[in-house]
Length: 333
Length: 170
Image (cartoon, rainbow over the protein chains, first blue to last red):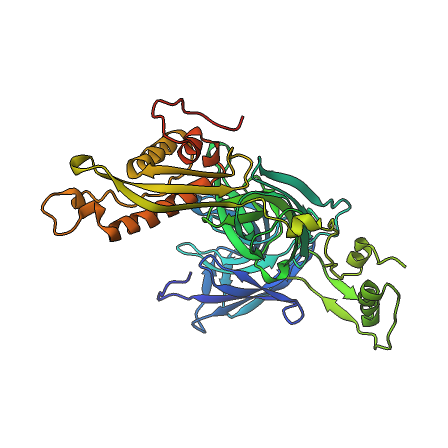
């Protein structure tokens, strides 16, 4: 922050070297708004320029040193004073002295480790940012630039389906099945609910996606539950032997990857909540955790390859059409 | 040739959204009577007695195919205070949230009214509707179905207020 003073002041501007080519993504801010930020992955180099512009040309700017930092930190809203920094890198740009004219400084943080994904939640925030600082005797001049980090995974080796029989003795028995236990953010939940015994009068059934953000440790653990989605899968009363299909497209919802015990500070987990409602508005439910992960870039091969798969489902035979080959880069935000 | 397995579709970046396999439904299950049949009607109000000991009773008829009820078709006579008894038993013994009963109408029991008070036809009908909603809501609750008091209320000739409260299912 620069204060209005009779002395010299300066404006700091941080610009990335690959600002033209680097992708920007939307990320929610603490007050719920969405802004765009440059997207980085673990291991990528962060390089750019710090432009220091003197406000009053001709006057000198005395300073105690100019530096730039790359910081990754976790901020718990109920404990704002304490920022937990898990990444802290610094580059000195200028030794203490004075500036007589505006100047530009180059910087490079090589192959920076960014172990966690950026997250803005209800009670906690994990962010990465560059901070350029001109140290001065009375007040520093600083400029921060937030970036967003995504953590990528690949298709898990083991991805068993979830299949379980649950119920209330003599009243309601169902068998639910979800095709996987781990889903990527643009995946589809394919499942079914099979009714084994129905002695209550069911009115409808829905499946909810619940996000649970857990902060704190030991006796001070706090869970914040948020229903991200409610998706009705059945309207009306089923009887024994009925099988209700589930097809829930995750791309339509605001989801993050599952985060477990990040830096021992917080977790973000997701649950599918199957809810049956009877004619008297009584609710019967079964919650099941799923793991969400973020898929990396895919380069699609020819479109005819996709058409071949699609036609195989219907006709059971390969059928290559005369479609032009298209190269597509698909980034999943 | 058999359809491609799901994993292959996944490796090529295409989500497989085909339905999961299910057993075909037995036609008797599909078209037979549902296993959740439960209907309770409250009707035929009758006012008995004279003077201070006058009161109204209602017929409570239950038809069901739920195995937990001993009788599939039962008919008993109950008065308002019997419903109050059932409500307090359930509030004490079961974990359910018991729905409200239609009002006690104490005002209607005061003297010097212009109408018949609690024996007014429109009032009896209003009460009948409320009692019917009340009993249907409770009888369908899986936890209430465990309580002896509910079974005694619905299917025994008279209510024994000295009964031993307890659960029906083990």
